Each structure stands twice: as structure tokens, then as C-alpha cells.
View 1 (tube, rainbow, N blue to C red):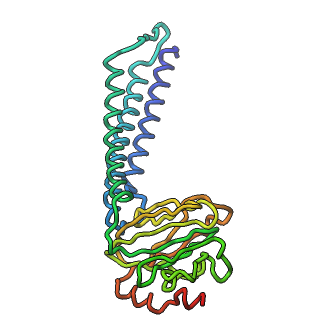
View 2: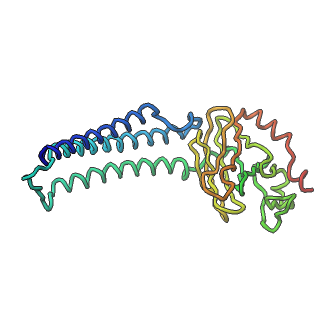
View 3: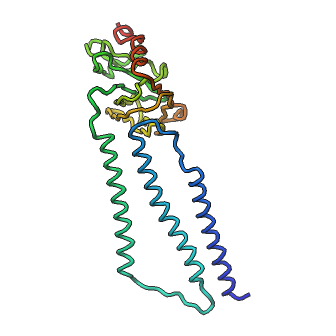
Length: 279
């Protein structure tokens, strides 16, 4: 068998391998189609749409490039006497493969930036439900502001076994605050109402993540970060830490309970306040 025939066979086999890999990738994505839990928030739909559009664009380019590669392997397979042809530049091709990806990337970045500003930069409504969440190795602690809607002052110097958040009990705004010891209680929030989450860390970097809500926000030591959302479905959702925070990172989880506003308020009325816990 001549080298030309061997080269042709190798080219065909390699092209078939490329096509098989492309078909496998398309079938895998098409068969599964989605990898996240069912959506349960208002803004999550826009995030999913952007995700799908990005996947469709990049996936289409991937398939076309791989098929072009498979075609080129067969079409331009070398032989014993065939010499490779080289060219140093092609202004038209260079402009096309520079401008087209740049335009597509710019559109995707602009769409993502606009969505980000709607979620993170835009101010939540004044009547939004507020809750403060503290991350620590390897648990979540929740604090509610009470009837006045204001969180009391905290000070690291006041942290103790009885007062894990360092709440200043002499601050009038802290008297009606409701807090729980780490891992003691689930997070309760209302359905169909804006919820503002203030995030703080007691030790290292954590990340507040609720997949069903498409919410993920870093929890940074020494500063307060926040995010807000509207949950549209009742139920219990897992709160995960999406930042490697130590050996027990895998066990850092909490539960978010989404319920009617009336049920939530009745639950809050039954809880002890700072005035009760830290007399």
C-alpha cells in the first residue's frame, strides 16, 4: 500500500473521529439540555436566557469549526509528491475572523452587563424584606431586623459564646433584632416579595449560592456585600457555599424556607429577640 493511500485512510479515520466527537457532544447537550434545578425566581429567567443564547452561539461555532476541520483533513490530505502550500497573510480573512468574534463577544458582554446592573446595581424596593446572613466555617447564621426594619450595630469586641455576632445590645435598633446561633434554624423568607440579603463573614471567604434562584454572591471578610431577588415558588431550597473555605467546605449548607408573608410574620412573632436573649 502506497503512502498516499495510507495517508488518505488516516485522514478519513481522523475525520470520522472528529465527526463522532461532535455528534456525541451535540447529542449529550441536546439530550440533557439543562443542568440547573427548576427555576424559582423572577430574575432567573433572564439569566437562563442569556446562558442559552451564549451556549447556542458558542456551540454553533464549535460544530462548524470541527466540521470544517474534518473536511480539511480529507480534502487536503497529503501524498508522496504533493507539497504543502503556505501563504503569509490574507487581509480579508483576518478582518473577518477578528471583527465577527469581536462583535459577538461585545454583544454578549453588553447583555451580561445590562442584566448584572438590573440585579446588582439597581436599588431594591423600599418595602423589601431584609435579612442578614453570616458565613463562618462551616455554617450559616441568620439575623432579622425586627419590626423597626433596622439592624442593630455589631462590634467584634462584643463577640462571645452567648453573642456570636457581636450585637450591641445597648443599641436601640438592636433590641428587636432576631438572630439564631449558627446552624440552629433555617432561613425563612416570603414568596413573591423582594428580599434583600446582606452578607457578612466571620472568618474566610465564602459564597452564598442558591441554584434554584440563580443567586450567587461572594461573602467577603471585613465588608458587607448584598444581593436581592424575588422567589416565585414555595418550598425549601438548599443554601450552599460555592467558595472553597476549608476542610469542612462540603458540609456548609443551610435551608431556605419560602412561605406566605402571613406565615412568615407569625413565625417571626414566636422567635426571641436580642432583648430576650441578651438581657
